Figure (tube, rainbow, N blue to C red):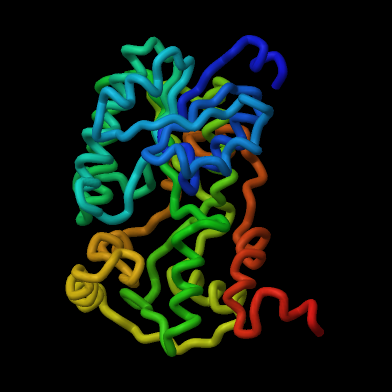
Amino acid sequence: MNARLEHGSLVTVLGGSGFVGRHAVRALANDGWRIRAATRRPDLAGHLQPMGAVGQIQPVQANLRYPESIRRAVDGADAVVNLVGILVKSGAQTFHAVHVAGARAAAKAAREAGAKTFVHVSAIGADRKSWGKYGRTKAAGEAAVLAEFPEAVILRPSLVFGPEDQLFNRFAAMARVSPFLPLIGGGKTLMQPVYAGDVGAAIAAALKGGAKPRTIYELGGPDVVTFRQLLDLTQEWSARKRWYVRIPFWLAQVGAFLTVPLPNSMRPLTVDQVRMLTEPNVVSDAATREGRTLAGLGITNPQTMAGIVPSYLERFQPHGQFARYRG
């Protein structure tokens, strides 16, 4: 760590204050990088600075929709990481603006700044033929990145879990207030959730030279579960027992469409998220066979859901987070 700090190696992390960003920043700080954590609201990124030494982590302002702000954020950087992504459209933050145009602008700025490494975080399910805008724009963003920065490394995580996630927390919150949970498409969709800390470690490994340039890595955790099993675990760890209501995909899409006028925080699932549930979200056989996985990046013991999730779902239990201490 001290050697890199003394050398002054600088990495800009676009989206550094977000859910995955904070884990990436911690891993990079442990490796000794000087870090610019670029975010739209640097005044809200103070939680990052205690993750490193004094002065090691600097929040800066940048917005992928404004290329000049990106150029300022990456100026002089040895490496750039792009973590910016959205799950739902919000005003000017559209899928195309963020996932495609924004990714292209970030890669172009990194190349023009002379950065040696560019790591772009995409998602399993990125496919130009995807039914959902999320998957289509993620695939288009990957192509845009490689066109601007041909030696880029692309990481495709599965669903990401961790204390601040919108996966287990969302369904646990739903189970707290609703008498039933939606079993969309019969709950058969396969998923391979990966811990945010392991995604952060994968980013750090890529910047240390552990990844092949112009290669797409698929990141999944050690457990493959169905959507129903994921809901079962959510209920077990939040001490809830709710009925399941089977909802076919077409009806779930109708319901998601009818909730469009509501704030995103109040919508169970968006139309695009329902569409994403129609396809498996697991590491492909080809990626496993070719070593384009966490193991290929040197992460051989990824965290299990059982080892992480119960600790942060405890707050959703009927008698509160600290009930077990009261006897």
